[in-house]
Image 1 (cartoon, one colour):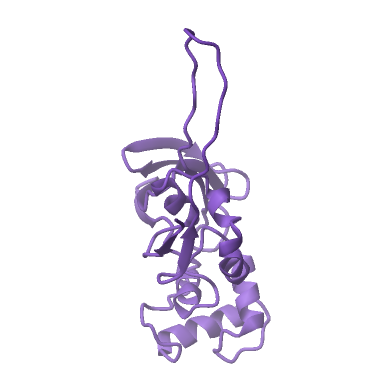
Image 2: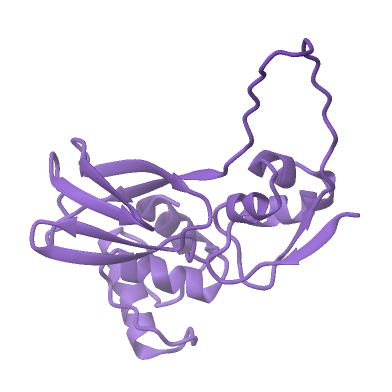
Length: 208
């Protein structure tokens, strides 16, 4: 029987699929998840409380000669972690050596000309650290909420350096000030309200 999985903070379709031994696309493309797929758009950006339907596993038959050794590969979920590094003046940190630590693994990386690094990591890992020079930056993988939720807009602003605070209130002065500053920077109507136009620009600038 299919399982209704209620999303917890930090979970993605990839991590949920990995828990059940399935490929992410098997879960995300299941017709039972069509409404969620249309609502969220991105399998890596879910909201706590969303319900993901995990379909039944389908038996698969393989043929092989008797008395011979055969090798089969099981699916181990992975996700691609993509980070953009910028300095205090919002300039890309191009060709910047850094070290990414996720779980028990460590990756020596160098950003590209746009300050971007990418690394495939196991699905389900939620915590990491990025070492850039003498700075240690903690990472929360899979914790970004959708753009149509207040928390998703607030955290994107924080990630971009706009100091939107941590309050779950769209009328919080710090949040409204951050929205106004963002709107001013990108020639939008400055009203402190993160409506559809501002949301679209915020998602574009943030990258997701």
